[in-house]
Amino acid sequence: MNIVDLRRDTITLPTPAMVDAAFKATLGDSVYGEDPNQVHLEKIAAEILGKEASIFVPSGTMGNLVALLTHTNQGDELICEENAHIRLSETGGGAMVGGLMFRGIEDHSGVPDVSAVESAIRADDIHYPRTSLICTEITHYRYGGIIPPLEKIEALYSFAQKKGIPVHCDGARLFNAAVALNKEVGDLTCYADSVMVSLSKGLGAPIGSILAGSCGFIERAKRYRKMLGGGMRQTGWLAVCGIISLQKENIQLLREDHQNANYLAQGISHLPGIKIDFNQIQTNFILVDISGTKISGKLFIEKLKEKGVLVTLAKPKLIRMVTSRVVNKQNIDYAIETIGKVL
Ligand SMILES: *Cc1c(COP(=O)(O)O)cnc(C)c1O
Image (tube, rainbow, N blue to C red; front, side):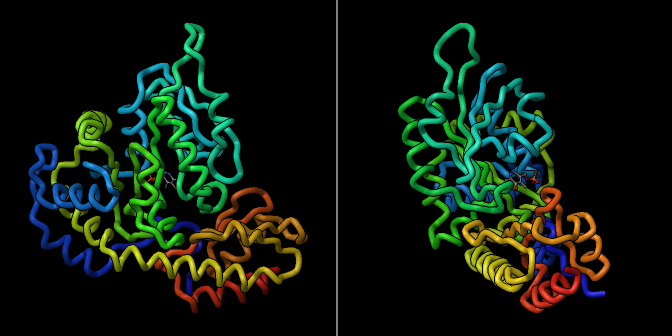
């Protein structure tokens, strides 16, 4: 059976060029800075992201946690959007490992207003924790891969700078945002002191993320990466895949994922009972509200699965579909046809 997997963009497999390069990679002990490919990856990633330095980490979760630990002290509070990945989907690592409190501010644009952040910042009072970090998320996962308005991100960053509070950007899909906006990724990273980007999602590398920031920040971050088990020794096999994933042409392939997401949304939006908010479809995610149909979300995804179309239940009547390079336009045509039949 033909499987059309629209569950996640983490299912992408390394390209033949990546596999080939991995087998030929020269290796060294990365903990001592002796893996030439990791050294090179960290150098080019910093350049692309417009930061002084970067480190390669095994996952986005570790990259974010290393950033939190580097920016804060135990007992501090950080401010993020209520439904931020860092708050909901990273097993509370910031609380458990960093001793941090998370202050969530709900905002469906994906980033809180400056005024809301301003009133959430703790006064200098012995009763309160210190607010020592603000986190943004681009693209915003829970709200369907949306790009929070750049004016708001910019305003929040200049406010944070005035307050002397650093900003960390969870940019797991920052390249999707840059491609969708026709901007350089540096046009987005300039509104954060540190940024995490995933190489293992839409960009197709098998494993790994990058954390970037100033030289001083990255020097301190290396200690936490080691503490959390991110000293991976002979990383060259992975690092070469990361290097290829950051090539311009590879990044531009995300554009096709976005076009496919739009095409899929157009193809099913007219089906009875289906509701799609086209403002939300900005990158490679589609949220499909099926509350106007008689079918339950659970049964809907089961029936689709029987026919080889894999999607995710985001909420009881909300379906998430994610495009990536493992699905092409023909696959999308099949998905559209199948969704119609199941309904
Ligand atoms: C996937 C993701 C992460 C975590 O990355 P992993 O490599 O899965 O640990 C962090 N933030 C967002 C927004 C993500 O989508």
